[in-house]
Length: 122
Image 1 (cartoon, rainbow, N blue to C red):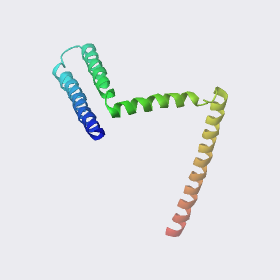
Image 2: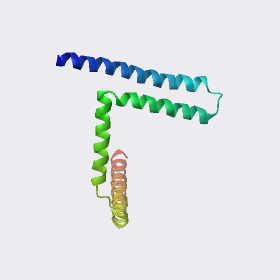
Image 3: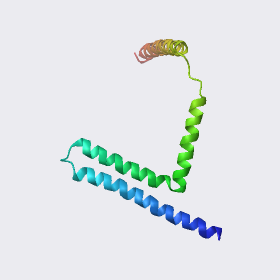
Image 4: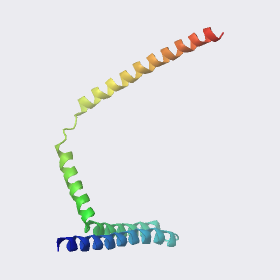
């Protein structure tokens, strides 16, 4: 009995995903069809279709899993300790200095190897 329930959910999910694909296709075709209309109306129409498609997609098992992932990701982002202005400035300056030093070292090595090859080749 459990397998039948899972297959029903899977079948309904497939139908829901087909509806989502149809809504997206409708948005693309409608945007082309109404190309002469104001961009404001076309954008509003696309936003309404996107909202409906998102609502239908969230009703599926994969949509619920994605929504759960998004909520958990947001909670994790809140836990991050972001650097303050001083730390950001110091880190940026260190990166810039290291990049400049490495650029000078690589330029010097390239110039030396070019000079060495020109001596060998003649």
